[in-house]
Image 1 (tube, rainbow, N blue to C red):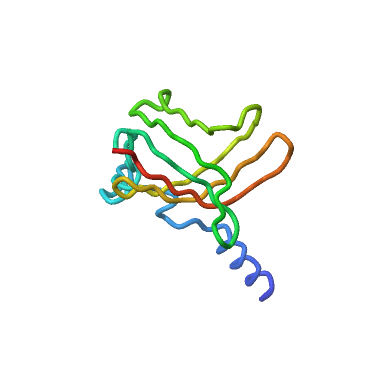
Image 2 (tube, rainbow, N blue to C red):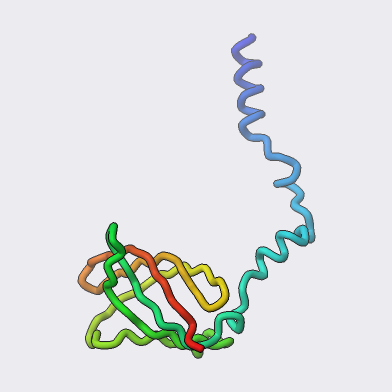
Length: 124
């Protein structure tokens, strides 16, 4: 009988859900609300000169110009001298004043994938 009780207790504990997960608060705490609000596109609007780097010595593989607006439809990125290249990128940037730093992952139509760092400066 002991094995059955032990198994029942383990199964019950494994299936238990904390009360907080069963009844989440209806309004998030102020700190959570502020974190969700994040940065506004208008905070980073402007013209940015950037470069993408790879390798242990941060070799620059491409330079570019970003035009950022408060409307996501107004954003444009220009890669000089790269006609005919099809690439999908995912970039994560951290903004401090007129400087942005972060990482990128580029997927080329050829199947190549490149990962590295990005640095950009907003032009005055």
